[in-house]
Length: 326
Image 1 (cartoon, rainbow, N blue to C red):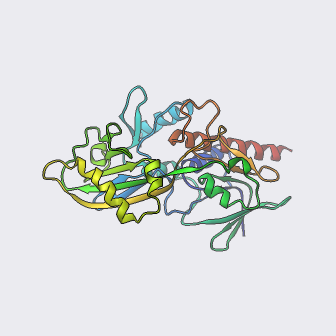
Image 2: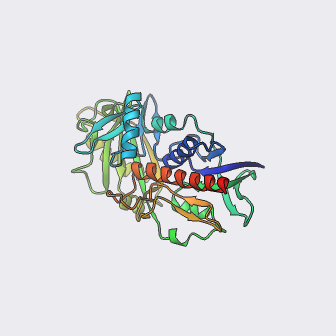
Image 3: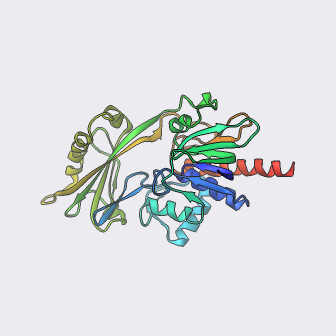
């Protein structure tokens, strides 16, 4: 049984930023536990034959000084680029959004392919994280960055009433390989004058991340929710009809894949960058649904996840340093 000062559950952007904030403040006895084979969460990129497609977040905008400072560093390092947009530029990773997550996390202690089954709050003792394989990790503080419905299933013994109303809309994404150029207009992004139920269409070749022509079709939360229980082949066939609108003369689809996001976007947000739970408030829940009070956008996005992670890391660091001083 191992012990850590801070255990972070979830290796998406919030978890990465919480860990980086703690490390920057000298708190290094930490671990990120991520159930997938890669960090990033919805900063997700899939290889499709010789090409690739972002099938989670496509880009991000900047409103806060914290993110603007980091964006300047990322631009200088060549990790990201301005894709399109005015007055708020849309930034994207030069090698796919998951590549940015990996760059941000490359110096962090991470345990991949590891699923948490429960979190227990042991009165006066340490918090206990139990993994699916039966292993247990003890910690002074835990930061949970999984989507709220998932987070609450890990906390059966910890009261989280103020979060139970937070629900998420799903999202279906169809990814299609064309054998020739698409007619998606430059710079490869379209979110207006689309068929009903379609949120956006992206050409990743024109976006600059794919050597082959790969096109993603994002469906709205309402559309995806109505079809969530259908077979994948049925759903993909419906989405493919949209992709076919952008083939052009003589073009054809040579590969089609589907991604289901069960927790794509919070339908209601929390007006606080984190919520503290447990007997001594040593369990913190944060993520893209947790917004700072002065957040003008008022919705889940890359920046809300980024800021929530930083705020959570700062709060835990403050608590740990306070307990050390006392």
